[in-house]
Image 1: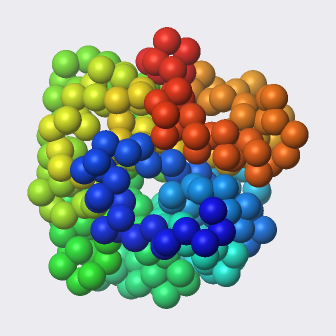
Image 2: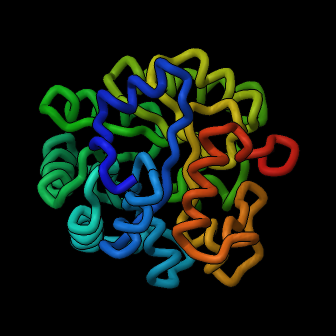
Length: 268
């Protein structure tokens, strides 16, 4: 797939309208960007999860804007056609919309095509401010790693009636504010399917079931490189494959065909 056309926001919307699943993986450097791009991954997410898998941190909270800009630049240099989303790290968008936009612009200059922010409610105003100024935004609802301490640890979100109602409202608010995508993390599959059907923007699931518009995994998780017991929603795609490229192609194929995730195995 070295000669494929560039994946743009317009192309992602076409895929969503046609019912084609969107395959997303995290990526942090130029070498992996080339491999993932050539394997047909639609979206490369420069995630602040680099704090966990590259830096060995227990949370993403210590990742800085400087580090996010650096890794976004690295990914952009290795990429040719995939769409690039960069996470805005903790503290980079909470102070004011003006300072948040300054940080978002820095990531866009580094090579991102879109930025991602976590949380609902107040974030709708940030999304609207960005979109009005030409910065596409991906929201992130459900379990939000930057709020791990406020959430009481790594817990599935939206299980009870009040929490599920709030998540549905937050998704609607983000869509109304102009968000182009939303990540749903560690959300019951039935709720994620309901949210996906209710909003116009594509949803990208991670531990949120097969009913989402696409799927994302942390690259090091799906390659079995973390050295820890995999989370329930993770599948090691190196099993049965002889190269990283083959494992990534398998991931893309299984997401596109609806074979991954399996709600009976990988969902809540």
